[in-house]
Length: 474
Image (cartoon, rainbow, N blue to C red):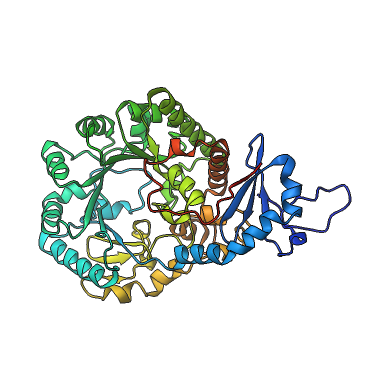
C-alpha cells in the first residue's frame, strides 16, 4: 500500500502517498497495481479512483484537471459512500431451520456439539418465524422494493426439509427463497421441489478430485461427500439459479485453477471461491498463507477468463465479480462483506433454529453476539441491540492497521466475527489482509486492460449510473 507522507530527503521520490501540494490535504494516494502502463490514484475516504499512465502520474497529481473535477464531484462521492455504508436497511435473512448437520466439515463456524445434538425448528415454529419476518419487512421496506431474500442456511437445512418446504410454499411471493446445502440430501424429489418453486440453490464443493475435497468436507464417520455432491451437480446442470461455493484452505488452494476447469465443464453458472473464515479454532489449523492463497486464487481467475475466451461461456466467480463491481459502481455490489460496516446486522441478519438472532451466520457460534430471539423480542429492538450495534458501528477507519489504507472501502477489513475470534475485537483486522489487497490490485489491472465485462454478470450495469466519467488519464 502507499506509504504515509513523511519528511523526505532530496533523493527520495516525490510520489509516495499523500499530496498536500494538490490543495486538499491527503486527497489522493497512489497505488502500484502491478500493471505495465498504469498506476491507480485513489481518494480513500470516498472510494474514488482513476487509472493514470505512469509517465503522466506527476503531471496528473501536480496539475489541476484531476483535482478540480474530483472536488466538483466530492459531495456526490461522499453522499454515495455514506449512503452505502450507513443508509441501507435489512432486506435478507439467513435462516437456520436446524442446528444439525450430517457433515463435520473442518472449518464450520458452528460448534460441533451444536451440529451433533442441536434441535430442528418445528414446521409450526418455522411458519411463525417467517410470518414475523414478513411483518417486519412489510413495515421497513420502501414501496416497490423487491421481496426480501430468505436463504435457508445451516448447518444442513435439508435435514429439516419438510418444515423448509412448508415455509417455501406458505410464503411464495412474500420472499425470494434460496437454500445453501451440502447437497448430500439433494435427491430427485428435493431437486424437483426446489426447481419448481424457482429457489436459488447453493452447494458446496472444495476441490475437483475426491482425495482433496474430502479432506475438509466429510461425515462424522469420516466419509467424504465428493461423489454425492458431483451427482447432485449433474442434476442441476440446466438450472440457471444454482452456484457452487468453494472454501479456500491450505488443503485445496493449489487446486483452485483445476477447480475452475471442473466447474466450467459441469456448466456451473456462478461460483464463489471464498477464503475461509477463521472464526472457530479448527479452521485456523488449515488457514492458508495470505500470499500463497492470493496467488492461487488469481491463477483461478485467470483460468476462468481463459475458458471464457476459448468457449464463449462464462463461469462468473462471484466474489471477484463483486470486487470489480465495488470499484466500478459501488452501489451495485451484490455482496456486503467487503465494506465497513459489513452487511451483518444492517443488510441482513441470521436466525438460529431456536429463534435466536445474530448479526450474521458467522456469529452463531459466538454467544456474546446473540442479539435477541425472534419469538420473544421485537426485531426492530433486536437490530438496535448492543450485539448488533457493535458490528454495525465497526468502521475500517477506526482499525489502526487499516485507517491509512488506500483500498479500505474496497476491502472493509473482513470479517468482524473472524476479527473478534482471532484477534479479540471486532475493531481489529481479520485474517487475510494481503489476500484482499492482491484481489483489488488484480481487479484494477483488469479494468486497466478493459476486460472487466468478461468477469461480470451479463447486464450487471443495469440500474447503475456514472458519478465520474474520467476513469483513466492517457
